[in-house]
Image (cartoon, rainbow, N blue to C red; front, side):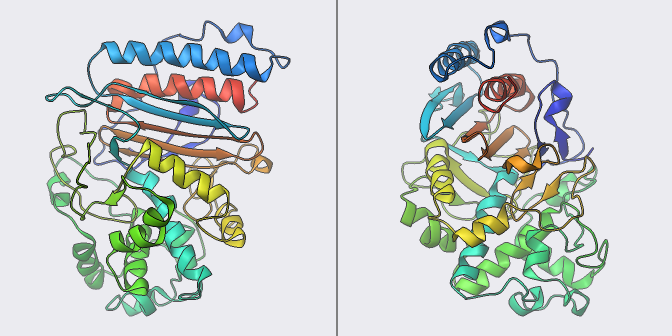
Length: 390
């Protein structure tokens, strides 16, 4: 099974969900309950105030139903035309302790970590520490000489050709990922330099590219990946509930457990960082996304480069493109929307911005297929009311 799935398969009109999964045993739940009873009330003439009221009415109802289940849950943040119109959550972060989710609950971001990793690279480029046409071998010692032609830009734009270490994982090989770290992957690559294609000749989504980018960030800033993010982004922006996989838990951290029951995903603990491995809360990601759009994370030029196709070659089977840390839909490219989603067992995440409609939103869940229909329903209302579906 591919980790790139279309929400449109569930009746939702938008973009590619780029998922980070473990094993070939995920299935997107597409039997969303028909909660769209108020859709007929919406027309192109529906006012801003009415749209917001309809959204709040329906999403509050959805979240109340989720809360009643007393299981894993969902956190939702929506900003439209400069106003935060929704900031709410439901369900449990930790079922045994009966700890509810709130805006400060920390979630594993899965592949939605990639925009932050890409932004850390672009910060180093903005400051002149590295160049996008630098070879990966310049920054990561001991890589195969065959990889000399891979540049930082190739990695960012998913056009490097490095095979994805997360592809075609089966139940038989799943345990090989238990405890996997960036260092272990580097050792593997040093003895296996095979590439899927010549760098720059194609594009193909690969988690491996972002492991290498995390290593570049580490070596370029002279600190651990987590410390680079803390000093370069988290601390300056006031993100007090964000960290990476290998850092100790924060003193006041409430972690949303996988399915509200465990820290492990599918029985293993994957400790790679860069493509995944960033933990953050709804409130912190909202801070980051606003700062990113306001030019307080990377320079305007870097922001523009990150949100434009890095290559004309699609990175996904459905034709969608990849910028630098962002998925760019092949549908309505003139709108300039950029997004990234993640899937890692029960963790399902989404960060999306659509400048054309001046809407941004974040969805975080720890409930897997149990909560996915609810998340899909919330996404439906966002698109119907704020992204031009009506």
